[in-house]
Image (cartoon, rainbow, N blue to C red):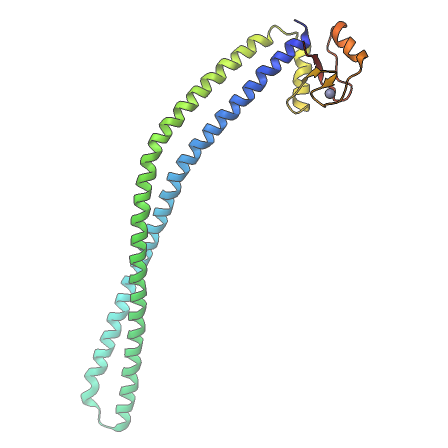
Length: 233
Ligand SMILES: [Zn+2]
């Protein structure tokens, strides 16, 4: 077999290997996605729990404020019997109104907090259920994808070892040239020529060059794209 034909076959190996690597990578990123879904839900639930904790602390603080307001109101009410003048009564009424209105505002705040707490609690419950569901699903999905990853890795190992064996039968200089072209020519180093057209650049190749490729031996390149030519048998 001529070197260009050997390289053409090597290229076939490399295309298969490239596809196998792409497949393996897609399995690996699928696995990442599966586990990210579980982690995201865990983080969301933790965040919700934190909010519930903060809300609960706010509630306790507010409870104390309301208690204090109630004490103030009680104290104020107790002074009612001591009122002697009209002026004192007016002052007393204003003060009591203010205290009651302050307490009302606090109670409203409390109501809002309790409502929020209830919503957060419902959200947390939903998140936890969702987390449990996704986590259970992920066990099965992971087992499935792990199987695919293992098979894909085994296949890739087999291909790589075959390639190594195949490459050892090709002159090193030819392989070196092939590797350079592979890197610079978008993964296509050897172009099949069919009906005088180079499959790498789709331009026609002169009879003279084709003649050289047929009979001269050595690696002949497409004058347009510089890829190694392999004439369709
Ligand atoms: Zn070409």
